Image 1 (spheres, helix red, strand yellow):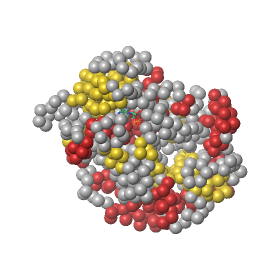
Image 2 (cartoon, protein in one colour):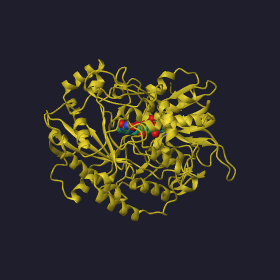
Image 3 (tube, helix red, strand yellow):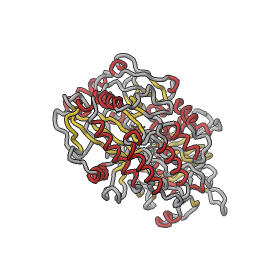
Image 4 (spheres, protein in one colour):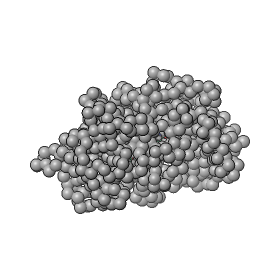
Length: 595
Ligand SMILES: Cc1cc2nc3c(=O)[nH]c(=O)nc-3n(C[C@H](O)[C@H](O)[C@H](O)COP(=O)(O)OP(=O)(O)OC[C@H]3O[C@@H](n4cnc5c(N)ncnc54)[C@H](O)[C@@H]3O)c2cc1C
């Protein structure tokens, strides 16, 4: 790892972005000693940083430029003109260094839908094969197992992959309340949600290494064990400005020869690619890098004064975003939660205990539930589903019709989830301040399959100028109405035992928020990114506004691929960390000709 010593040198593969997928891919490609790889990462190495490694600090490094890009969206017309902050991981490991440790996988149908959109080989069977390759699951043992009684199906888990996963040892009272009340409302408790069925309630695993209860992520799992390979070079604080192509005659495909990158001091450098350039800079930055390289929508490129080398209408389009709202409740009897960390003495003691593999720092977000709209409110589900079917702009954008058909089929399928509810052990809503000595639960409602589509485009030729992010939140009314149903369902849950006796009062938004208009306003004023944005470089047929083909190659190029979650063309009901590794593992096989 270094900073400036690779000027003008040549590598077989140049990977842009040392994040989740980028590092995983670099590690797999350099298993072949004959292949050389360089990874260029805009952020710092951050190796050994306690802000990354020690769990239980959810959001603790948000807005810190060492760890967080802290992007902002443009004003959101349907969210009361708010500009939302989008935290995304910066530095080695990317967002895997910043995330909240929830290790989840999608329903099989969501992955199969990606194949149905024109991507042979991107299905559940392949997903599970590559997901197993990326992980080592550590079954909990006593005393963890006594604290959180669990069943699991070992056949669904990996046993020798780089990312360590387990069940956090800290037991939450709120999980008993939440999952107990869901059970009393008739929702099934799943033995193991990692086999393609997630509908029901369950305890999630976390990407924690039980050896010392620290974060297992792309850096510790994929990079550090191989950092001394002579064929792997990783350069940090190197911001890629653009990909450099050979001049192509007429409509001949473009061949990438290397990339230009900028050092912190503004110095411009170049590195060359013998075989391929691979873009793994994430959903937000990939479209900007393509556009600065002359690939994208001509009207976007001409606006910023970049000559169009390759017209590709899908670049920066089809952006899909999970968004969530929280509803907070004060807990009866103040059982321990993350809230106690606000007390400096308690936090210091927690850090000491963590060093011994004990205490609340090992806390995870574990109580999860996914369920269809119809089981939240059958009458409203019919009304809303019929309403959205009638409202969809079927032919406006190429490729959307097929996506919406799959989304409608999923909405009408009473076995598939449309709602996600997660129990966060602590106050995670911003409108009310926590009171000393009191503890809280925040029920998080997550929109998984939005119908609104956003855009992300470069707004200047300066690679340090972040792109214009416009997620078009709630442009399709169904997305808002779906969250209204989430909200009402959470109120019903709070009236169900044992949740009911476990809480004193709803603190946010509070019992005064009752009319549909007030609920909508609360959602618009408080919803936030769930940090899982996909789609800006969708894997779809080119005429459907695809950017990459099923081999992840950018249309109209001979040797430029995209490998990260930006290629997901239709959002999945899962947090996206595990899926980023699936994409990288599969990409490695595609590139090595082993698929
Ligand atoms: C706050 C937060 C919480 C989350 N919580 C969870 C969770 O609990 N569970 C879960 O499953 N998922 C979670 N996620 C989502 C998950 O972590 C991400 O979806 C996943 O890590 C994305 O991987 P990626 O490879 O697509 O992008 P990233 O990991 O973001 O990698 C992109 C990399 O490219 C670098 N880069 C960008 N531009 C340039 C450039 N011009 N030059 C060089 N390098 C560049 C970035 O710095 C970054 O390192 C969370 C994400 C965040 C941000």
